[in-house]
Length: 238
Image (cartoon, rainbow, N blue to C red; front, side, top):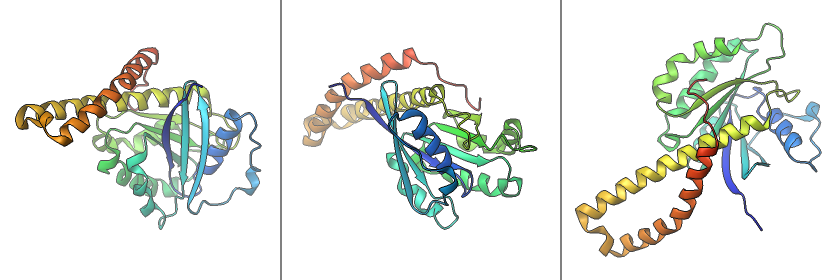
């Protein structure tokens, strides 16, 4: 039976930004047999919510983490295993925008997230007089140096109704994840090649083990390249 490639996506942001509501709407839209939780019963996350959906050839596993200040210290425990980040912003709460930006900057400064693609959701766009996507882009514009060359897409969203939760969005996120994995793979090849040249690394036991691992990666990399050609990546800060 065909096994889908699995990718871990973090859902981060301040408390009350709408992260769990977004996850519930996502599971409801993409999982045929899932009966979603009543949105009125959703409470502030303390710990972790997990959801899994299938999109095309990929399986996305979401980790929705609590956004209270005292829980943000737990975020970095999940960075190393993540392939992408969805950062949710409450477009109606201008008073906490600087706090959200501070949490965002701290997150993207982590070396463990270097190169990891970002999807920023401007949530609650159905509320009158909310901040628009251009407003939020402007407020976060000085984060650009820390974002660096990684892909970062900003999109409007209304988690309560599910607007902005669609397959195209996740296919775009998957394409960014694949691109990131391919880039990391290229970097690993360069490092190993240099090690082989300088230290005769291939003759050492650890070198032979890594060479075996390299062989297993070749088929996977070929598949990644093929799928990257099939998908278009969104522009940076689109």
